[in-house]
Length: 294
Picture 1 (tube, rainbow, N blue to C red):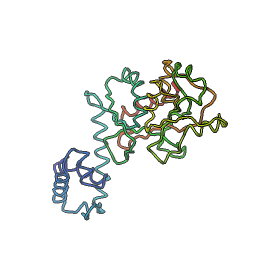
Picture 2 (tube, rainbow, N blue to C red; picture 1 turned 180 degrees about the vertical axis):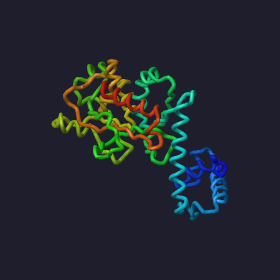
Picture 3 (cartoon, helix red, strand yellow; picture 1 turned 30 degrees about the vertical axis):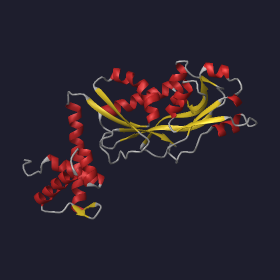
Picture 4 (tube, rainbow, N blue to C red; picture 1 turned 90 degrees about the vertical axis):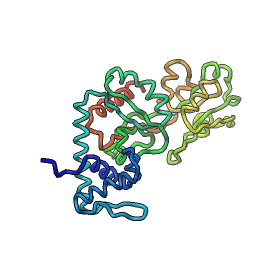
């Protein structure tokens, strides 16, 4: 019945190249060389007797026939992937991308409850500040992002909106009753699209007459928190990321009433993974966990 169909590897190579717009990117996703992808697609074109791509100097563009096949190939591979995921007895791998700070200060410390509930799902976390396009990269199932939440964007799932507070160890606060002689710790965003949340903003709002003391800056929030835990100063940081340190009594608030509005953590689901059980389970757990614990 299906003897006329091309080899599955050719279809996978073609679908990846069509989605990513690059033989090189398709090869990286499938762990093949760009030459191997090119050969797969050339063999597929020979079998079909049509051109699927227009080859240009630095890019490839789908032909009309190629666009039609790309849509069908994507749907077929998605259905096959979903079915295999559902019937397989092997551990399912859920791949998540998020910021380094959220992974280290919230996600990893809270992940045990998910793994206890779903031991058959293995979690792989990719961290970094560079945004991965999950609409094109099939290697990622979920992206936990941070920034301004757009309630009109149907693809965003709101998780939690933070506030920024000032925290330090109890010992540091006892030794520095006067904030003017202490050290203030803050984060300077790598993402320049985010408005800065700084000690200068905090002092202007809550201590406008106080001269600005020494300020120590880090480019990662978890580094700033670690500096505060080491007794190096008072950190201005997200309530979400400081939650565990506060619960454990490692950090104390400088003034609980002096907090500033922050940003929102939200979830993006890959269009290739949205119907998978592992994605639905993790999404439900994450939304519930953040609503209860923050």
